[in-house]
Length: 357
Ligand SMILES: Nc1ncnc2c1ncn2[C@@H]1O[C@H](COP(=O)(O)OP(=O)(O)OP(=O)(O)O)[C@@H](O)[C@H]1O
Ligand SMILES: [Mg+2]
Image (tube, rainbow, N blue to C red; front, side):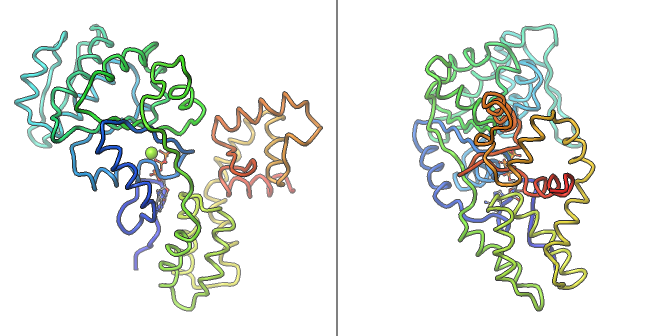
């Protein structure tokens, strides 16, 4: 039997659950003249959801992650490479012949891969503008291209003032729906909700939440019940209690439990043993992260671990606590649901163990 849980990369088919409302909402927006802005903390399932909706919609799309783009030149190159994958080469070669700086395009005959390069000394912004304008030219009104830009909050790290330049072109395009994804919530809000920002209200804002408990319970029950002699109901509620329906961590813990039970049999401390193995796997990383926190951050993390609201604790000046919380949230270690929580439930356990709380 194959482990029925998956964590880390994009999930689909048997590994994908729920998100029915979200899927139909995205399809609706892509069917209109509008763009979508999708925000959630890390690993809530943005990529999986968007790619699933692309499958349903069946229109051409390209997806670029801005986090791995180094400058405007690189951005332009990646757009062209993505476009070459889905549109006929002859048509494209003809269109790029009109660029201000004509790129070199070569194809590897064996792999079929296309390599695109611009002369590095040419103006990156101009190349990028040409590449963005090309998107509109290759798209068509009856099969509009969808352009997904992941980790869009990185836009101005790629090039200063790039947001204004892109928006000036994008706002005139008729045959493209853009999807902007981001996991740095406050930065995404700055870009799309601040009146002075170039992308102010550029599309429909959607926030992705955790997976509803009933759906996750059903998903877990169905898969865990395939194990022999298992009291799966209790197990399912224990898992949910620990991971609080976080998509990634729920799958991670369920994967570990299933693996252990399948290979070594069901034992009384199946959950504790599974958690210990996850902690062991991450021990080195967690320790490295921990020793790099300053003392204020450490204190605050410890308070959050013991379910204390750091802002009600008077040990530190409120302003110090506030800015530390902001920083820890910005870096993804703490999230605010109904209260402040450690984002990674296993890191929470590790902090408690490490500090002998
Ligand atoms: N609909 C879903 N059903 C079940 N599990 C899911 C679902 N969506 C996400 N997950 C779990 O969360 C993990 C992360 O999903 P995904 O990579 O799509 O999230 P993301 O928000 O794009 O993450 P990142 O912030 O790293 O880009 C998946 O590997 C899977 O374990
Ligand atoms: Mg993603």
